[in-house]
Image 1 (tube, helix red, strand yellow):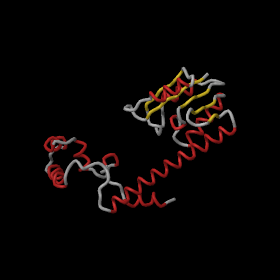
Image 2 (cartoon, helix red, strand yellow):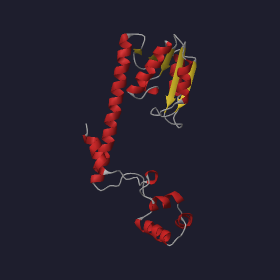
Image 3 (spheres, helix red, strand yellow):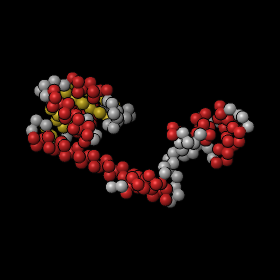
Image 4 (cartoon, helix red, strand yellow):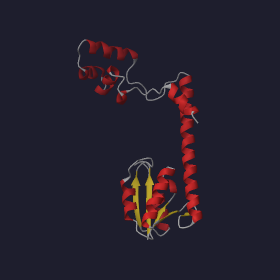
Length: 203
């Protein structure tokens, strides 16, 4: 039995192209999901894999629709092997029923992982370059330095955070972040130059 799986990363995207291709390939049972490929838990994918039986073929538009890392891909292949199912990509000549197909799919996963690592390193390098030029990385600050000083002044006078937030027309979380910048969940969005440089050079 052919079992299809289609995925897009966000709710704004559509799976129409994938669905049309799967149906054209003769797939009648299709699991459709809108979730990031990097998500640790994808409920629809889990349901799809649980439905597979011996002899079934998991059909995908491209391999990266079902697995976004080599580790995940190998884990998926192990799950399919346990139940006696195979995987087939419509846009890559891959079929795990053959040794060559298994080799190609593992190689493809390795290349995809390498590409993502290179993209990440380029992003980090860009951040480092921006910081070295004095550009601030991350979301724009909600409050100016003067307003942050005002927050601290009012807090020192015993004014409640909720009242300070109302006076400055910001959320209480913004005020709390100014008063407690050391808290991880409220830390300012300012990358530290040292770790970024280390990340770029450790390879």
